[in-house]
Each structure stands twice: as C-alpha cells, then as structure tokens.
Image 1 (cartoon, helix red, strand yellow):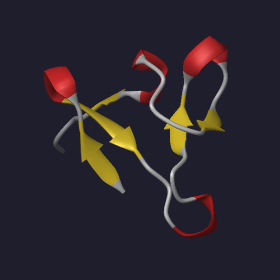
Image 2: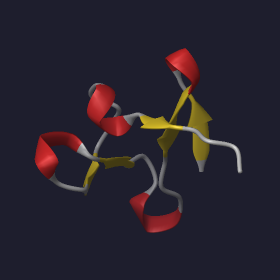
Image 3: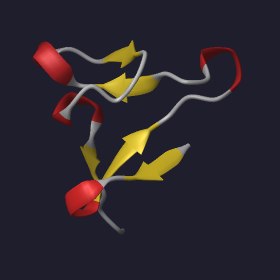
Image 4: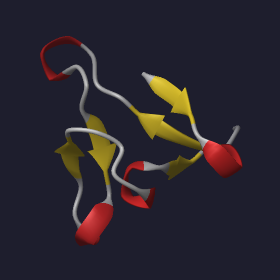
Length: 48
C-alpha cells in the first residue's frame, strides 16, 4: 500500500501477514521495518 509522506515522498506499507511493516532502504540494505523510523522508509514517487 502506498502512503503519502512529506516532500512528495511515499512509504510502502505491507498488508496481510506483514501488516504494519514498511519497506526500508536504510543502512545500504532493503528490509521490512516495524514502523516508519525515518527517511530510510520513505521513497521518491515518480509518475511514468
């Protein structure tokens, strides 16, 4: 699920069994985090 964040960024939230977790790109790795902890869980949105 896409959640709008500040500065035109989005957060990618999980649904189903992983509900409440967010896709993170912090610390040079991609993982799931329990909550939005900072910019590592925010992504740039680009319209194609």
